[in-house]
Image (cartoon, rainbow, N blue to C red):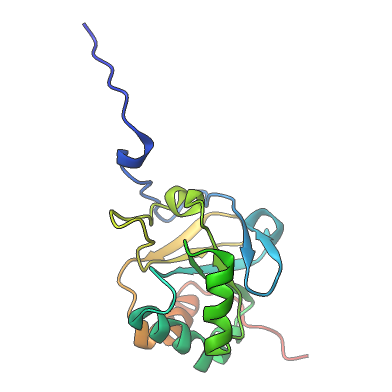
Length: 169
């Protein structure tokens, strides 16, 4: 006899995405007023830096690092975002308070966070950064993000992944 158990979605193991896996598509509202779809960014390297909660210490440090050292990331031909499960209004206030110069994505439904496997037992995103290649496949996942050096670490990973530099013309 086979036994089938109905397991609620909230208690199912999260996705364990790894390099080579197709990145789940998303369509998320951002702090710049735009809605970004991963599928619309095909052909470009995309970095999504998930953080747990706006207006908290580590998340503030991480986003400040991405702003203060953003030129090291923007030297590469890449589109990068921070992302959380906070609602759009909260993330907009957070981005404005830090004068961020990059979009912060909001996933209040937690569907994208779940698809990426970042939604943790506290129902917030784990501090993980995903690197998505132009073909839509994950090229790297950093599960040991250091908030203070987030931008430098992203730039170093982009170099390691041999992402093209932006042309200066």
